[in-house]
Structure formats: structure tokens, C-alpha cells
Image (tube, rainbow, N blue to C red; front, side):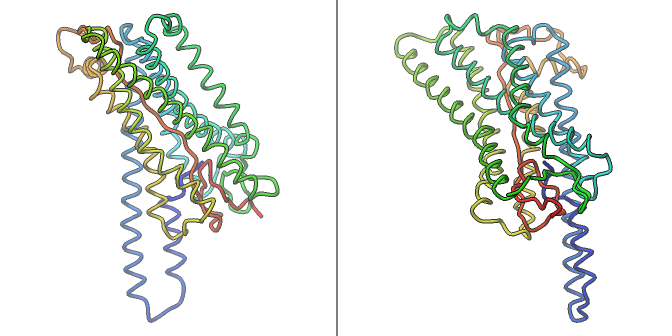
Length: 367
């Protein structure tokens, strides 16, 4: 579950290529080394930036939802769960870099790390799906769904999300090992390894992204139909406007999630048919970093898209206005946000030293 494109791995490639004797290509080697070194620095700075912003932002989201009573709406409780998943996912970045060189923490922590990374991905996707279903119930069945749209029920569903995510990702827990030949933490599939890798990629892609995406799209299709028919029959009430505003915000978060994760899962599927050349490092880096950017961007989106979150952030950071948090009528509709992520990188078969992300389809398994 580690990102394929890692600055330390690139450094190793630079050093190994530069040691090959070729007196006629010294200048070329120096140019390539300089270019890769710049790429190295850029990658490192970007990962560090995403880590800092992601940890601080998601910690702030978690704090304000727990701290302020008025923030404990059904929607915000799902956002709290998403923020926990995003935080857990972002915290894996340092181990990503360490694992690209070698894994010094032993077999047990290897399993813990790989399992936590996989669970955070699936929990984010499932939470986003729950959020979309919640929007569907609120807009299409506002009366009948009251008993299901309570904070106590939301907490129960949040717990179920983590349990289901763990059960789905049990193969990761079982087959994650420190590969002695390469001294990295990765998935070691039993024989036939290639078949198990392919099945796992399809299994996780379908359950962790494409199936939830179909459910999400269906929910919003039904919402659009309901909203259009309701607009024809009657004017907009204050309550209806509030629900429409919340729904619009959720849709924006969903779209950002899809934009960040669709390339990754598409890359995994493409890799099953045609292995993306290992020297296309920029492609792998782009596919992986986008998933981390999604977890990093979610708190920023909350601040821009939700008045309640913005006021809560301002209060915590001592920039709040005298009228307090959540004093506007916007509280009637709850908070307008959501978010997420899921993940399993694409890794070509040829390079066993790379840290294949959870879905590294063709990792060399010490063979």
C-alpha cells in the first residue's frame, strides 16, 4: 500500500545508472542526474506539504465536530468519520518514504500499517456513500426517513463502516509481510501469484470504488428528479432551500473525490491489460499523489463550502465573530459537506523494490 513513486527510490535509480561505465556519456549522465535530483526535491516537498496540511486540517475538523454541540448534525458525524479516515491515510506518508528504502519495524507493524492504510481508503468511500444516501433520504423522503436520520443512527453506521472495511481488507492483513529479499513491507500473494493479484485488484476496485460510485450516482439522479418535480408543484420553502444547499455542497465534495480517485483505479485496471512502463515515473507519481491531495483538500473544502465549519474554524483559531458559531439559519439544514478517498496503487511487475501500494498488482514476492 505504499506509493510507487518515491524520492528515495528515484535516488537509488540515479545512483545505479550513473555508475555504469560509459566515458562518452558523462555529460548526459550528469544532466539526467541533475534532472532527477530536482524531481526528487519536488516530490519530497510536495509530500511534506500534503502531510502537514492534511494532518492539521483533518485534526481541526475532528476537533470542532467533537467540541461544539451545534456541529453534531447527522451530516457532520459522517464528515467526522471521513476526517478520521483521511487523517489515518495521511499519517501513512512517512512510512511510505521509509518503506521505499527498507522496513525496520518488523512483521507485526507491517501488518498494522498495511491494514490501516487499506481500511482508511475503504472507510472514506463507504462514508461518502452513506452521505449520499443520507442526502437522498433527506430530499426524497424527508418525513419517512426521520427515524434513520438521527445522530445515534449515524454513529452506529460509522462503526459499521470500519468493521466492514476491516473484513473486506482481511486479505491485506493476512498476506502482508516483510519481504526478506527486498526488506520491504508489501503483500506477498500465495501461488499462483499473478492470478491472486488480478483477482484482488478487481475485487477492491469493484467494492471500493465503482460499486459505491454507482450507488452515489443513482442517489443524486433520484434527487434531481425529485427536486425538479417539486419545483414545478410549489415554490421554494426555507427548509427546501436549506436541503438543496446541503445537497449541492455534498455533490461538489463527491465530484472532487471522483476526480482524485478515478485516475488511480483506472490505472489499476489498465495495468491488468497493459503494464504501464516502469520508467513512466511521472504517471505513477500523479496517480498516487492525487489520492493524498484529496484527503488534504477536504478540510479546505469544508471551510469554503460550509458556513458552520468556517465559523467553527474561526472560533478555534481565534478569528471568530462575536455572534458565535452556527448562529445563522444555515444550522437548520445541517452542515453542507462531505468527502473522501480509497486506494490501492498500481505497480508494474518488473520492479520488486518499489513499495507497491495496497493494490500493487504485481509485486515481486521474494521469489
